[in-house]
Image (cartoon, rainbow, N blue to C red; front, side, top):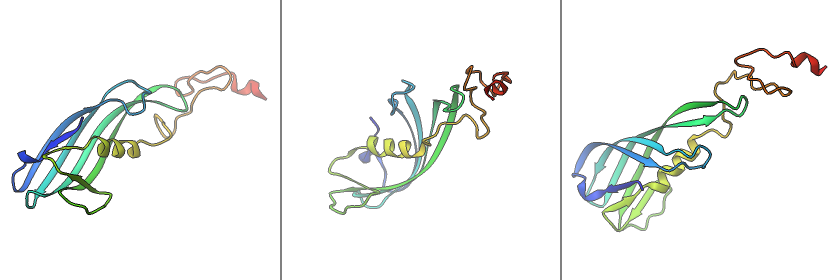
Length: 148
């Protein structure tokens, strides 16, 4: 769970860093995602909290071309409001009636949209030989010419 305690935030401007762990979102790697977030928070009046900052996270992924694992780093800018006791509907406003606010689904959505659909270890990945399966990034294959 990714929670923020609004009661612990001072009025005015403040800088906060949080570290969270989220279970793997796609169940492919079975690893937890370590998230570091840095926010400048403006607490306007104990009901409106403006968060402006970024989150970073790393994932171990499997390349779609060569089938090798690799580490990929992400940094996503984040800006949202937390409003207490409000009915205003907006995509970047999180509503609450409590001092403890769960950001789990919000952060999860940011992570999901940040991860490219195609997983490549590099833009120039050569992939695998379709005949013998050798990783063409590491070795040349004699099979390629046999296809003709």
